[in-house]
Length: 231
Ligand SMILES: Cc1cc2nc3c(=O)[nH]c(=O)nc-3n(C[C@H](O)[C@H](O)[C@H](O)COP(=O)(O)O)c2cc1C
Image (cartoon, rainbow, N blue to C red; front, top):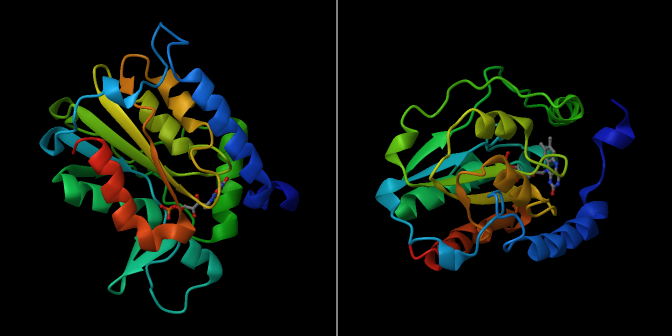
């Protein structure tokens, strides 16, 4: 892996991210009547926490709150001395507020915690279109009407384990909400990808995303978003 490929600066892509959000806005409504387009909030029922599952993928690069490197700080959120991944922490906030269950997506293979090694693996998987093997699938998906799925943006896309996850579960009839944590990349076009992957689900265009730099505001931001879902 070359350095230019593995160390792309996310700032350079901020403009692209904004542009893709604009484009996404144009394609959300009624373009694809075979299914596979995200739908407006008015078409979604109010979220019932007891029938909601919050699913997340998150890779905190350390579990030690002391003496973190910059990369470790970037990938974690520390509360009361406990280390969480950014996406993990948002999932826990959502689940707590909703009284919902959680499920963590994990790969069968343990992931490297060294940042550069993790980036190299993410790029390698992405370039090869790899579907990494998952440790477990959700055993009781039929018990939930609504699934909120959260993931960090990796290389301007979902981490490849999310592709494994969406392809290996039956989301027919489910209401699906997406959220991401990231540096600057927002959703990075992943809403449209997921909506296409799940033509038999109702995927909401009402997404949530938060930059890792804003994690101190995450509780308030999550609360506002959930208010908007009628939760
Ligand atoms: C392999 C890798 C690739 C990343 N690629 C991007 C990216 O393309 N755009 C971005 O804004 N942030 C990117 N990030 C930053 C993460 O999205 C961000 O730190 C996220 O909050 C990490 O979530 P987690 O702690 O739940 O794993 C990347 C991080 C890693 C480890």
